[in-house]
Length: 358
Image (tube, rainbow, N blue to C red; front, side):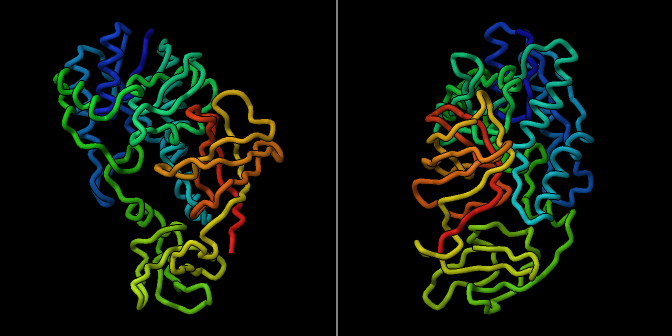
């Protein structure tokens, strides 16, 4: 096949590209140029270094390489979604949207116009034997199918995940054996294709601080927050209020936007507003067949969070009710809920309304 390999300049996409080339495919590398932090005002943004590394790997493999400028589309489809979500009081996930809207969206449009058959990425995910489904990656510590939950069936069809069968140590060893420049390069921990940028720093660059009171469940003022958009439900660190006299730490349990209040409480197994079983999902998107009937499945509310058994019930167009078997901690409006049947990714949705316990 003629495959466009999305190369980020990291070791994962480097090995993915190398494996495809070794299999004899016609492979071309492409770096998505989504963001330039020219003034370096929001942390380290190593796009120039990443392009150099990606090009060096492409040269080592003897393949063609392109830098595809998608900055305008990234601002419109990902950054706008991110900023508007936080300003509206919800918690969006730019990495999930980057995959659907950019890698397998705009970049695929670019590739399709040039005669490519598929796009490959360095995600830790696998394709099913039918070629039309996505399975969890073989490495449980690196599985990234959560970030693919909002992909459309036609995007799944053209997606290739060459490293999904590998464990991370195995991938590093393959990179060394292949002599790739990125073999020892550290993994990126930043926002999708922006770089080593903390979310708080990114948000404060574009959204003005709006300080307000930090209160407990009884309404007592305990401190002052910098802006509700800078805090997440379930957050323990960085709240700005010290532990109580018994060294018990506080956790964020609610954001009251009308009063501009951040509500915190001591975390216990029965902390009010922290635990929930029942919620409403919106924007339901499936990677394959529609989820149009009640069923039991596994629902993962965050990355690196176990998927819990739940009953899924459609309640309208692209909406559903989800009832977990066991209470879940800090379910958050706006976040992505990935839906599974065992190892198979069924799709995803956005948490809309949470019925908190207590």
